[in-house]
Image (cartoon, rainbow over all chains, first blue to last red; front, side):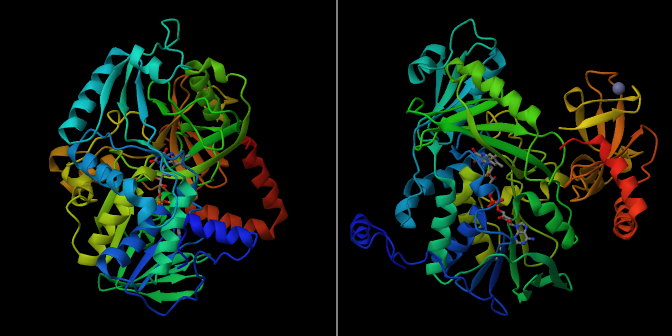
Length: 416
Length: 122
Ligand SMILES: Cc1cc2nc3c(=O)[nH]c(=O)nc-3n(C[C@H](O)[C@H](O)[C@H](O)COP(=O)(O)OP(=O)(O)OC[C@H]3O[C@@H](n4cnc5c(N)ncnc54)[C@H](O)[C@@H]3O)c2cc1C
Ligand SMILES: [Zn+2]
């Protein structure tokens, strides 16, 4: 692998940047691998990378039906935070946060991780009580957090309407200074390049169309490019996971919904942190390019069409303009949707299944980007050892039958 | 944007007046005490989530406030039929696939397909 550095940049400038090496190979599928990862999103690619790097499993294929990162990974609003209420989820997201903090160095790829802080704004007394409870829980778990009053919020975000005249006046917020944003496609590409360098085969335009199962043990997958064998298969397919599970004769408690985001025309730097509001339901940050990055809510109905409905966009922009009257005349440039796999307790599923050797990592719904490194790391450990990693273990499918749910619905602010 | 026919009001209204309420035809176990943890979990949490024909419950929230059912395609978002509570769907995943196959060979069928599409504006 050609290492990236400032020196390299200067060197390649001399040849007009025309001689950069390709970032990864485009291999032909082998007959068999030790591990197959289905789904070349951030979570699948991170899993492959940590399998190779931390656990010495390099005979790995990542099978992706489209292009790397073309699912939710490069469609999200890139918010990264770890201020979740319950111990189980706090452990998982904070594990990810610690990995984010060294990620660009680790994979020698600038993922533009920017710890600009995240505000989860409260507009009602109940919001504020929930915020206090969550921040206290976070601090007990060693996760940074502060409760701010309206003045504190105003000081951080001068352009936000924190006056008493607002339709939903801002009463305060939780503030996680270590939280922030990262560049989502760089995360997919960075993991892909680093995994490829360790020998992982990235098979794009290859769709898994079925699982090969004999006597309750998986031994491979059917694809549009022929069968590929492996005794360990990790399925990391986000919105398509329900369909994948059905192919293996497994049920998952997931529903797939469209979730939208939109970006404005680029404007001068005006917002240097991330603002999320559960109550009026909108969240916003400004990218380094200058566009405002705005996230909407899910469409309430099930859907697999990667687009969303206009009423949802309208509601979101109402919420944004309510909080930021100054943005009322900013024009929106692009709008798109991803298919998110929502889980009844708003927590992911990292689990073995009743098919031996077949694992699922899904159910991240509207908020899994922030978990990408942590999810990949603990899932890789689980696949390598055949036992779920202690951080992953509480997220088993069984919890929906035993009742040991991890309810992160309201508590984690807006669900992203 | 959906344009939905409410079977109780008897007219098409905009999506904004309605709320989707998830998968239709889920019945509560008759005898909860005799239900195993597995069956109870299935009833509460596990849904079909198909890529294709889906039967779902909707409520005309700011209209007549009645619940009813829609059969809808989850990829094309086409509304295939609307039916009242207590009624059964006439279009299912199985017969829809058969109908689709036949339709491509039969122009008349295509015309009736077009009729189904009236419920949707994408
Ligand atoms: C609009 C939007 C905003 C969001 N905002 C945030 C946010 O601010 N913060 C946050 O933390 N999270 C956010 N999320 C959620 C986050 O994007 C996802 O949880 C996360 O990216 C999931 O990553 P993944 O790798 O599991 O899935 P994906 O990136 O979706 O990857 C799954 C891959 O599997 C592939 N696949 C599916 N079926 C098959 C098959 N049969 N064969 C081969 N390949 C297959 C797909 O093509 C896809 O590339 C948002 C999501 C959306 C849509
Ligand atoms: Zn009505």
